[in-house]
Length: 245
Image (tube, rainbow, N blue to C red; front, side, top):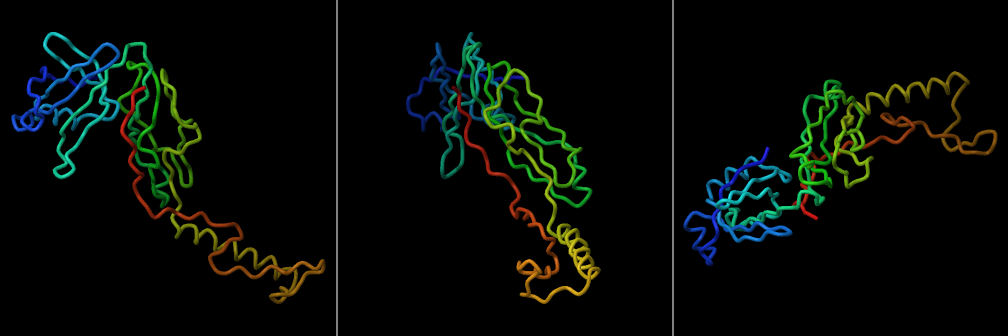
């Protein structure tokens, strides 16, 4: 559903005075469109609070309406307030590339087993005509178990092309280090039992009958195979601004 905004043709050339009067300067452009406009600041702030990077906007300018996407938002580096907005109107049959928000829903089964859910990618670039670009992609993660990952190829999308490899990871349920140690300890104990069943283990540094060095006794917490390190970070990095092609 498109977010509606009412704009006016920009009359004030001084952007600072325009903002003091309660308007934000903006532009809407496309193949056959280019208008310098101004939007009431309060209306724009409300619209932006509801929008994602792939939200569609309906701009009303007098008797004309423009279906457009956000192309760029400029902010004041000191106050973080919006100082200018670019809207882009593609042609109905012209493919565009947009970063679409990925929203995860549900509690993974792996969390109940002691794991932690990490969202690796928050946005996914897709390409298609404007009517096929989704505002967000909803993903149910309740079936994800401990040690499993969700990849782009697992998603069901129609009408758009994904602009990343399908094996790219979206989210994963990591095994905490304390669970890795708990699993590794019994494996090491079984290995020691196998050695003593044949007889006394050779001394450290000794060689076997074929001349190969005897394996050193595993330290506590080692399981023979390398352990996967759980990440210490939390959130995934933010994606860049959307680009229209």
